[in-house]
Image (tube, rainbow, N blue to C red; front, top):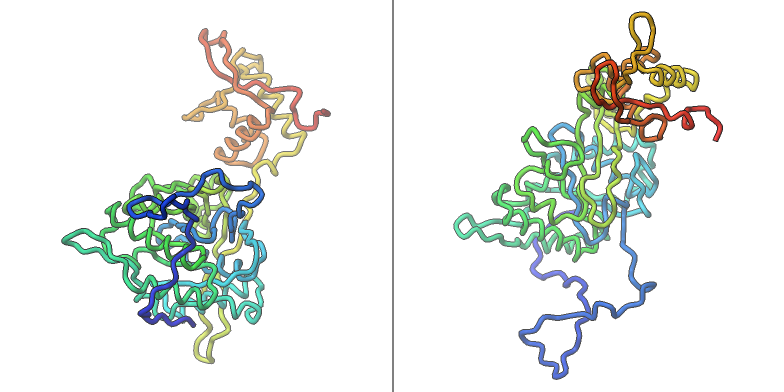
Length: 420
């Protein structure tokens, strides 16, 4: 277990660029420069990703999540993944790494309960990972930045250098700080103060040659949403300093309907999204996890063991799985025919691709009639067909209504089962 003691000596400065030499070696009052094109392409160091899209050495990442979403479970299990070096839940570490957690919300006993449950759920060997994982014994004392309320200046506290020295001496590759707010004594709503506090954490990452992941709470604003980096609480400067930002949210009512999850089980699922990635493209696709409970083997004759939550990767069912090729073509036949009257005669009106009120023209009703899906899933099926070129939305003149409209047209060449 890592003990953090205040050190009197400063850690060594981080790596610096090689400056141009002045003709007279008198560089006082001048900026240090490097020749921008003085390099060979093949010699440029590759980015040191630890987990591509999430953590990169010498940079800051931020996880934004509301209370109860499972952020501590996710960061803990992600740490186990990085120590193990094998893919899990869409996370693909590029090796095996030493990980340290600073969790101010849970004591060491609680963290070890969760680790025990996670090791069992993920089928990992505790002995194989024992030398790679560390907990700060007194995380509540880890404050690296402090603001003077009178002058509004942010001071870097000695503990930042203590932390850097501790990380170096233990070979820490990844530091998880949960939550960021507990390490910063200042106004969380001040962009200026938050920016300098974040810059201190970024310096920790650079000097320790490690990746730092800060866990931050979500804004109370109703606009907070998965994949939105502006969901972060307080000043936006924190996500501005970070290289990557990810979000973790509980499954919404709409997501549950689209994915076919019963309302009684919705609370068991969380979604993990990219929100910002300065050094790589965001994925645009959510990773899903299901919360489950494991009972530890720490019970006594008088009391059963502790029940502890864990996250399991979950792949949502595909609404398209409910549609066979014959069923798909039956639906497409009806869409191609368009709306009919009471006698089954074509009216000349096409089905609508979208309809906010889901009236009789909405094409989703045709999908629902031939499958066991809910409206939200029907909409996702239509969206998939449109994306794949099976259907398209066209403008036409509706003779029955005597006005121009938009409607669904089936692209016959792209029907399911049609030979190329």
